[in-house]
Image (cartoon, rainbow, N blue to C red):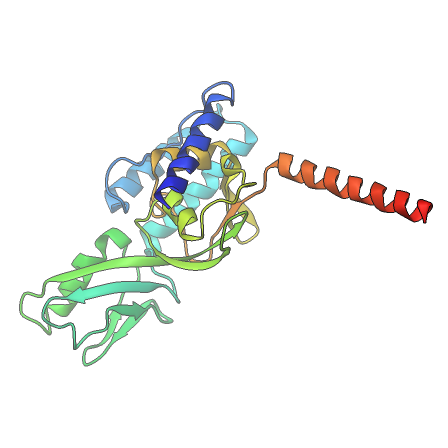
Length: 258
């Protein structure tokens, strides 16, 4: 798998070298924490709003930034944990009392045995350990808590094992694709697309940069239910069309001969 991951990065590097003028970097950057802090998200929202107030953006870039800014506002207001999400939880000395994975239930709460309901609404992934520490302090003396958010995404298209995967939010985008079996031989990793519902929230240059620079799912504002699609290369589709045409011609000739 390590070789295939290196191959993925090599393909991206070659694709970038052949793409002509260097692309503009996105506002976000992979520097800092693997999961965004509230301060980082607010800073990036301020950057987006400043750029959106200018007249230098084309329509496509303005649409992308508007969607991204809206996602960040929602994260800051409502937190990262939606119904159906899972949270990894570890409390030192209480491994037999508490489960290691908890489900976010309606109302943005988790239900812990012997403790009851713990709200997680408005909490970011970067805040979840501190949040559980505070909530569980009423039940345990100075609890040592480690918690992290999981996100369920669909990895589709030209990968070894397309399907739904529950992954740590701090996993980098390239590792997420590798977890689904890695790109197939005919995959166009230069054009990976991320979709949410019917909208494409990232694609082309942006995802290529994200793969090259090691953005995590959290840094890309990935939410549960998002789709990561790895398309086929056009060359592979053309080759398939040529092969189909040749086979059709041969079939026709054989039919005429017989």
